[in-house]
Length: 115
Length: 133
Image 1 (cartoon, rainbow over the protein chains, first blue to last red):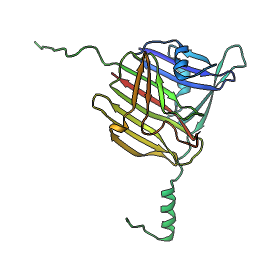
Image 2 (image 1 turned 120 degrees about the vertical axis):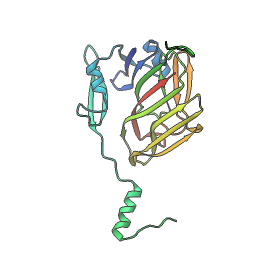
Image 3 (image 1 turned 90 degrees about the vertical axis):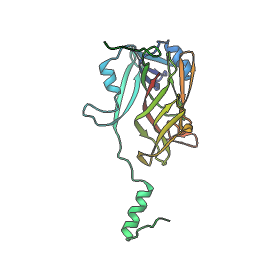
């Protein structure tokens, strides 16, 4: 089963595209993928075999199963580009406008009727 | 003695992958490379999202398209309430696919992969897709 992970980034290290594929597919040059994505003036970090540490770093949940937001950039200051990960907790969903209205009506002791 | 009949030929083709939507451009499609089969079923599932601006807009949460039977099912999420709140099951919910050489482009015709307003991206998400053929 084939595998590929691509990280396309610009000269400043800002990531332009992150993608992973696993299964029945034919390997194509990273330049062909960049062209298909409409990316220009980009470099690419590519893995053709899964790297357990890299794949774990990209997981949208931590080791304890908690969901997280994964932000990735590339440090281009050194001789070799390095992935830089920053994680954020997934915020609790905000109460919707309908729920706000229901809460306000409940405070007033009003029960809306279906109309 | 047990007989066996082979119908058709070839095994199930399967390809999965992930992509993260653009933070700067409204995204209506995703690209898969090296595709060697014409998918009969495509499933797309949102794994996580980042809400940059909460303007209460919709974006795609889940989509399943069955091309042999000509129907699709779509579930949308709303930035105002990160849980899904709307669904549709009909031919119009089907993801469109375009295979050119070995490059497959899958486009949503129902809800974008991000919420946007006035050309700005309000949400961006990581999705996983599954191709079966």
